[in-house]
Image (tube, rainbow, N blue to C red; front, side, top):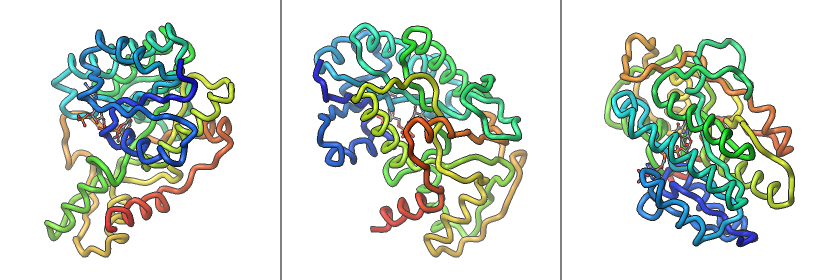
Length: 290
Ligand SMILES: NC(=O)c1ccc[n+]([C@@H]2O[C@H](COP(=O)([O-])OP(=O)(O)OC[C@H]3O[C@@H](n4cnc5c(N)ncnc54)[C@H](OP(=O)(O)O)[C@@H]3O)[C@@H](O)[C@H]2O)c1
């Protein structure tokens, strides 16, 4: 095994790309960044040969089927990528004594809570994407009890597709927008999640025992409407934003009304505070504007 090689899947996604931006900050590691064309999770039978040829000490799986609404009609594909392939990766990593980190979602919960969801809260997925991720979680831990699963929510980045970039585009195109105000959660800057992941990798590399489920999101509980208002303010745009209810914005996949992850465990185990979403958003928008 190459002591310092990290294999990242989904290298062209938000999180995979942000991990790629950390290569020089973590020069003690060699990063092998694989996008879909080099490692396709829909071909799990090919994964073992690819991983063993690289011999990483850690696999970070950021690749996922993330089309939440399409998942309602593409059950098979969502399960193949978010469950079957994840379980296979967990198994391969166990067989070859490789650390395995993968990601899951706030949508594994029912969205009915009134307090932040702790990591051990009962899962009851709110939509089929959540079902597929929950099956990936459960299967990975059953195959490989040392799997690390980081649940996250409302991910944004200067790279890829996300709410921040969609809002900026629409606010420039339209005089007014309707934004859902009765769903609350915690936005997550993919750069911050990538950095937290690397803190975990450093801890693993020094022999610290880390395993099981973690939650990561930026500090602060807001609605999509609050999020959009801040994006508008940061960008100095004039588009009028109207708060609406979930009923006024039907989507194929149900969304949770309360989607707040409790992140205390990761803050404690990595001994690192998580910054507020507003600071993270400003940094992301400054990057987009530069
Ligand atoms: N985005 C969110 O708001 C959010 C919320 C909660 C949890 N998460 C989880 O956080 C993790 C990172 O998400 P993200 O925001 O970085 O997602 P993302 O930007 O949608 O990126 C996902 C990546 O996975 C790749 N991918 C899709 N199917 C693949 C396949 N069959 N084989 C290999 N790669 C494949 C995509 O490749 P292409 O570029 O070729 O399409 C894309 O680059 C995922 O596990 C996701 O489920 C995300």
